[in-house]
Length: 273
Image (cartoon, rainbow, N blue to C red; front, side, top):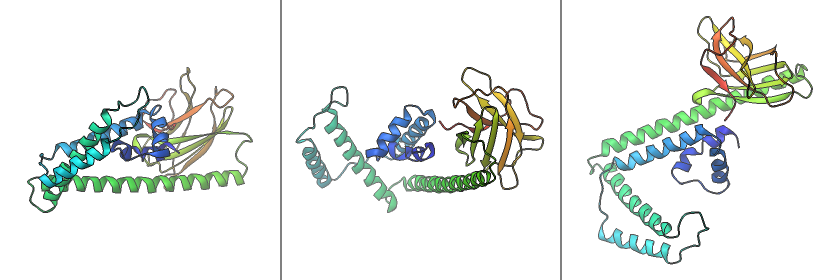
């Protein structure tokens, strides 16, 4: 799965609603991706904030009895827990806490939805914020899909015109800060080809400068490119000092059109984390 696909699962993971292969893939990814760890933490904090915003409500006697029966059924046979993982005693405790939280949270949402609760306005605001967030995520997903399609088309065109080197390495570029821009870099030695989509028009006097990144070395400056009116960028250049092999990454920053020898402007495209 790609970084963007895994990032889209962070909200479900924060709510404990992710399992199976998706959960395993995301947890393996989280070990190396600070951005997705921050995404999970932000979603968990938001979910906790919703619960804390609601005043406690005691369940009715009938609901309490059903709750006790459910907890008893869940804890009748405690599963064995491998050494070093969650203690066995924590399983029924967590189940009881989750069930109690569900009763309390559900009761307050019911009161709010019928106008009986004092926090109906707050709940509606949370629902509205969540709806806006979902719409924003859908819009971002559509824009990223559009950018990938444009990159595929540019790559196919370059291959048809035989503008790529045989055996060239390829690296992906992702928009910084959740931007919908995407890019690809193809290189063989010092010869570097770049293509990008969904780039905003740069401010006057500035353009997008390419940098070759090698661990232990200062960023190696490439050329400055300007996107077209549709936000598409493509170009070829020679970046001196790029070592042979595939241990090279690339980034794009916003710089003066004359170019600079060391990055000074904000990063726009970076290697996926």
